[in-house]
Image (cartoon, rainbow, N blue to C red; front, top):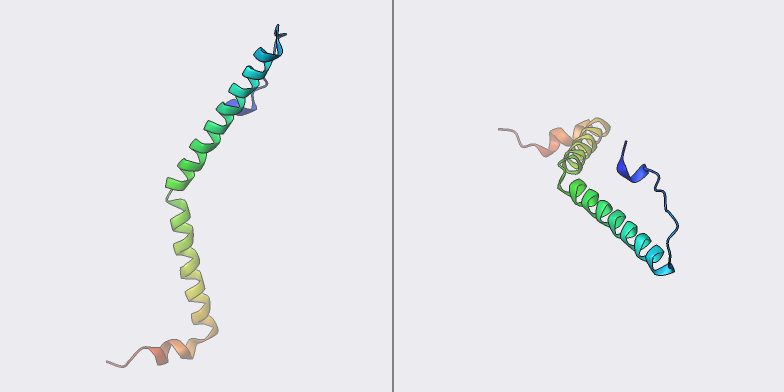
Length: 77
């Protein structure tokens, strides 16, 4: 199970400062996890592959919609 979904039990703290520091640490941990995940996704090749496939599909759809244009655009050898 993913660590971010684990329920945290907070025991009674003596002062508000302890409680505040506890939650500040938890928030900073979550921020760090989020930044690491965004960095990991940014390095992933999946975004690049999706963009390449989207461009291929657009070209194919254009070719299917206008078959005469593709033949006219290519010069005869």
